[in-house]
Amino acid sequence: MMVNLASVFLYAVAFATRAVTASSVDQVHSRALGRDAALGLHKASSYESAAPGDLLVSARSPQRELAPTTAATKSGADTLRRVAMGGVLGYNTAAGVVSGVFGELSSRVRRNPKGGIVNQHVHEEDPHGDMSVSTAILNIVADLCPHGMLPVAYGMAAVGGTGLAVAPALLASFGIISAYTMISVGRACQRTKRWSFSGLWTDLVGKRSAWVVELAMALMTFGCCIFYLAFAGDLFSALAGTVSSLPEVLKKRAVDLVILGLCPLLPLCLMKNLSALQYTSFVGVVSILYTVIFVVKRSLDGTYSEGGEFFNTIDARFRSPVPSPWGVVKLWRVGPGLVTLMNMSCVAFMCHYNGVKYYEELEDRTEKKYAVTIGSAMGISFGVFTTMMLFGFRTFGAAAQTLLLNNYHRTDDPLASLARLATGFSILCGFPLMFAALKTSFFNAASEISEKFGDGGLKMAGRFQNDETLRTGCIVSLMAVVTSIACTKSEEDVATIIGLIGAILGSGANYIIPAVLNISLLQRLGANGGLVSEITLNKAIILFGAVFMVMGTMVTLKEAGAHH
Picture 1 (spheres, rainbow, N blue to C red):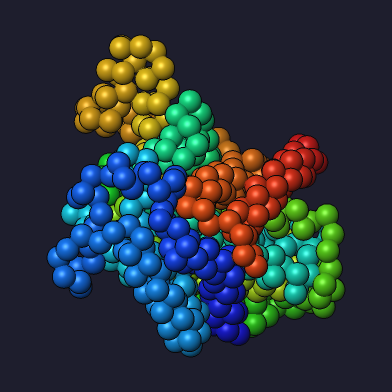
Picture 2: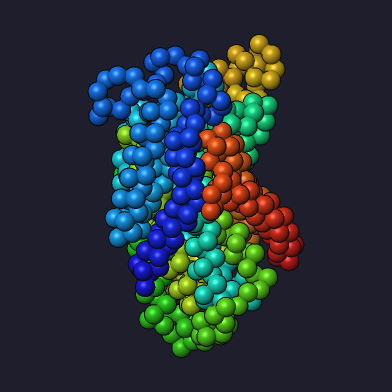
């Protein structure tokens, strides 16, 4: 059933992507046929001022210069042929649809340094991109699942519960929107040749506010790193408690977190690129799969149901208050707990902080290849989240905890102990990916802010980007601060952190910032109009993000007040 759900999810991602991009392709093609500046961001005069070398020729055609209109027309026709073929062949698999459509959103173009867009049939190779599609998928799944799969059952159970049909549909909706905005970030990188959020914002929106974007990303990833470590502290301290031969000091949560922070996390966090983490990501994904299998098994074998082996041996607050939670919640129930699940869903599909990095490091990168990568990773993650949510709720109902594994017996259930170990490994493997985004955003924000303070600030900005001693010191300091805060946070605090990150910063990073960038890019491309306006879609995403930001924050603060 979960495989089918994941396939449906991937298909929905592909169909939505096709719908919102089809009009852009048609519009660009019509401009290619009807105007001299076929793919121009400005008027045809932009081409007249372009250097001869800016008009690139297809590698498959004779080596001669093409007039702008001719090049764009040939590109537009070629695009439509490939889109048609991708549409027919790609529907055999969901990922195939994504690869058949989004990668050909229009002919590949690049910005003319003198103000226009010039035809670019020849792909610009990136000598630094060495991350394969499979490695990227592993990294993204390892990035998403450890923090996303644990709280979703709690989100479904919150405030009376959310319906069994509504909850997966909500997850799928957030996944589709997140996949689209991630893909649009990659497209913006390809078109502008900028490799940071501040660079994209500077190019597409404006320089003055670029620091705000990086600061928001830094704050978001900082909070995410805290709850990553808080989860790890709960898991490994619980595991240490099962080993009677360990000294009591090593069973303390704070001590375990400090040890984990020093080794292995700090050395992993000092690595400079994401492809170096492929082996830890593989271990993380295997650990995730074991945890999912364990949750399903314990739900079906009844050991935590009334009369089961472990039901009376766990604390009453961890037991389901009803014999059959699935039978109590109506299929289509929508209540106040829906907003809590929305917060969890937003955080679950949140890896946009690494969106630029994933695209930059992708081997032989193209928009099409990136779309396949994102669609596949999001589809796999959706399957994991839905399974953990439905079967975690089936086992514990309204008693499901923010960290689901805390519901299981701490010492007597060996499979639960192994699941904690596996999840702990998956969190440790995913943490460096999250921390990589924190490093990038922190240094970019520090550079952007420093530049506002004259010559001395410019010098300091350069040091933040190039002085390895300074950068290493900052990384160690960031790790120390994150670890010290995580040592003091309880499970209720973690739930509040997740809610606020999802509502405030997640809304900005997942929806508002990518949509603003996308609108500016599409306006330059002249891609508005047609049956479905992609610009209108992005305006709707901004509105949704703003409303969700307010509602999610209010509900999270209300729940936090109730706990305290």
